[in-house]
Every structure is written in C-alpha cells, then in structure tokens.
Amino acid sequence: MKSTIYISMSLVLSIILFSACGNNASLQKYIVEKQNDNNFITIDLPSSLLLTEDNTLNEEQLQTVKSIKKVNMIALQLKDENKEFYEMEKERVKSILSTETYETLMKFGSNDMGASLLFTGDVEAIDEIIIFASDSEKGFGLFRVIGEDMNPSQIVKMMNKVNSQNFDLSFMNEIGGLLE
Amino acid sequence: MMKKIIAITVIALVSQTLFSQSVFDKFEEKQDVTSMIVTKSMFKLMSKIDLSSNDPKAKEYLNMVENLENIKIFTTDNPTTASEMKKTVDSYLKSSTSLSELMRVNDDGKNVKFYVKEGKDENFVNELFMFLYDELSNDKMAVIMSITGNIDLRQISKLTADLNVPGSEQLKNIEKNKNKN
Image (cartoon, rainbow over all chains, first blue to last red; front, side, top):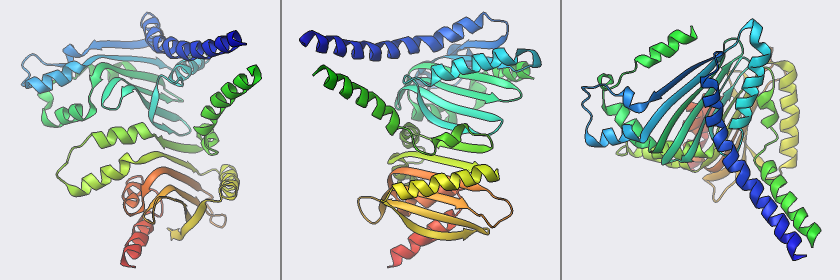
C-alpha cells in the first residue's frame, strides 16, 4: 500500500518537474533550430551592441542596460507556397507559449491579427519578455528579450530620461527592411 | 485508499484548469470577434512602473489597478455571434446568482447593462460585468466586458474610459451620485 502511494506521488511530482524544465528548454531550442533554417528571418543581438560608443549613461543606467542580455527575433513570412508549413510552425510556437512556464500579460486578437505579451520570472525581476504576433496575410514574428532580473520600472525610467543618441537602434530599420 | 489518491490528484489537476477558464473564453478563438485580455501579472507590473509617484491621482489609479485580477473584453459585429454572446451572457447571469444589476444606460443609442458581484463594502465589488447588445438596432453588435478582482467602483470608470468601454461616462456619474448620498 505504501509503495503505491509513493509511486503515485513521485509520478505526479515528476510530471510537474518534467513539464516545467522540458518546456523551458524548448523555446530556446526552437529559436536555435530556426536560426539555421532559411525559411525564417532571424536576428540575434547582444544588448552591448545596442549602446553607442559615446553614450552618456550614468552607472545606474548602465546597470539597467546590462540586466538585459540579449534580443532575439524570428519571423516567418506567409507565402502561397508555404501555407501548410506556416500553420504547423505557428501551432508549434503557440503550444510552447501555452505552457505554464510563460505567463501571459496581455492578449489581443481579431479576425486577421493576434498578439500576445508574455514573460517569465517575477514582475520586479523579469527573466524573459516575449511578444508573439501574427497576421493572417503577412506571417508571424516572435520577439524575445532575455535578461537577468530586469526591473521594468528601472527600464522605463531609463528610457524616459536618456535620449536616443545613447542607443543604436538601426537594427529596427533592418527588421523593417527584412519584413517588407 | 489508492482510488482516493488518484481521485484527489485528478480533481486537483482538472479543477486547476477549469478555474482559470471562464464561459466566455470560447469567443477568443471565434471568427469575427475582437478580444482583449489583461492578466493579474500585467496589473502588478503596471503598478510597479511608478512614473509620477508625486501625483496623488496617479497613485490612486495604480492602487486600483494593482488589485485587479483580470480584464476580458470581447467585441463582435457579426449578428450570429452577437446572439450567441447574448445566450451565453443570459445563462451566465442565471447561473451566477451573486451578480446583480448595477445600472442600465443608453450609450449612443445602444443598450448597455452593468452588473456587479458584491465585494467587501459598498465601494468595492469583486466583479464588474458589462454587456452591450441591441436586438432592435441595425448593426447588431455585441460587447462583453468582465473585470474581476478587488474593484474600487469609485476608480474603475477611469480605467474603462481608457479602454473605450461603452457606458464609462455614465459609470463615472453613478459614482458621483453615490458620493452625494
């Protein structure tokens, strides 16, 4: 009798543990996998590249920037010839993001557009911010900011105070160009 | 004994998924429905981003936001979906006896009804539910809004106004009237 209790308990526990760890690895794995896939547009950028060389940030602001480690983006364009592949990939991302690892902050959906904002970590110490957006005619994109204990209020404060000269945002134009 | 453990585990797992679902979530995936969902974590996060801490009005607002559980809004212009929403709302109101009508207003020729679930005192409610539907009007649209949490009725109209929820203006007035009494 005792052993059945033990077995069922450990079974439940291992299911919980597996689902937590397994899924965490899979978004990372998915992105790495797609970085070598020519069907996808991918961008991988360490945050150090975002700062211009002659920036005028103070020590605290630099620390805030340093809490952001990396910016990832992958996008898949929808074309006439890849509809099936597109739907399959979109479902894969959706199922990864629907696991408990990722907490939804906001979701928006209409007929031809959908977007969701998710995160991992704590609201005052965020590890990962994810934006997943799709358009029924253009395709989908996954934008991910990875960091360590990112503090949203510090980041917003910094963004408000410092001017754009401190940041090299040319990669934004690049993304725009790629999606055209 | 064994059966009991399994039963408890199953109930625990199932109820966890059931509780997070609401009867309206089915509309999220439906064609011709625009949906917006904001979760508790987002409210917590918003309240942490304290930009104008010296402004008492902003403080009040953030305080109100921090105590919210979630907001769901579903809108449709499709007459079939709209009448389906009406049915779901009717059965929701029937099944939940704790929801009582707060007010009915006419916003831009449309019939808007607000319902509340009682909270800790007269100024606070645990749910604010709004349904807009007009069978008689030509454009048969429907809007469902549900806000749950510890909601300060004196503050909530600011948020609904920000979200362009119909009837927000009247919601503001009812609170003014209430304060006079």
